[in-house]
Image 1 (cartoon, rainbow, N blue to C red):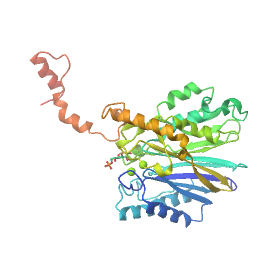
Image 2: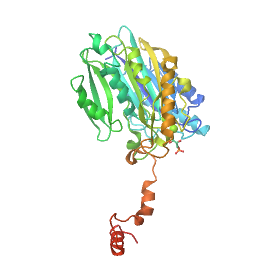
Image 3: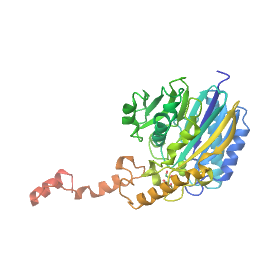
Image 4: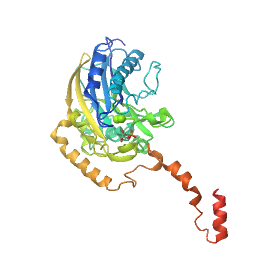
Length: 381
Ligand code: F6R
Ligand code: MG
Ligand code: MG
């Protein structure tokens, strides 16, 4: 519908400075220039967290619009040219294919988009994280939209009291399912408690049927068939007037929950809420960071941003995250700091195992003859 507004957040890592820690200012300028030259957008804001560039765009062309996706793709291509010139680290790493075919989904960049009728006043928050995965939003989205200990509106606001619907993606089997909360809370939790596989894709108000939140669920490593970079996620949350208040949407981040990612995409660490200025993961390439930019939409114009986690009220959360980081780092290469074998994005296991296979013998093989037989059974020479 022509008068509806679309908010599209499309992100990619197209080169880090230095290493995988940050984005060079020239890339941000290039992205701003590229978006400013387009007449497709109502407004835009270019942001970054860690080594990811986030294009926050408003327009009237709906979700999955080929022209908008093409604009984002070309913007990232232009940034890649600069990244190559500066020899930035991993230049162009999230642009997986040379041929763009109408939609950036499945091609590397992360996407969260929603189309809606702009309300009389339309406060939105764009959450952006680095060094983690889309399932990292499961816990905060659950708290915002389903936990009365976080969101008092669920209890005392008549517009929220019915609850919300949660759309959950199975990112391995590429299926989706919808749960109605609060009735199906326990069923939902069985799935979203496993954020490496199940991610909350969207949340809908039961009172109005409107989409209240949407996240990016691209699993880059699976899409590419090999590891090419973290699928650092973004999430849009609409606030107020029957939806979580801004403060209810921010509150879950006061308890830095553990997420998968961090160093080499192979560790568990606390998700630290930070300002844009502090969104540069350094210690052990982390800890994972989350930034929250608030905007008021005015006829599609992005009024803002408000850099929410710059607030001193999140100092204690950062301190807690640092304490958790200290504790986990002392575990070194041991689980649960290091992720389980099947979740690591870097591993030497196949190579090490093939080299040592012949040294493994069956437990309980005691006599020489049994040891020899066990070795033979394991294919040892
Ligand atoms: C994690 C991340 C970094 C890199 C690490 C090694 O998402 O981006 O922790 O995995 O710096 O990077 P390479 O293998 O590129 O040297
Ligand atoms: Mg990177
Ligand atoms: Mg990143």
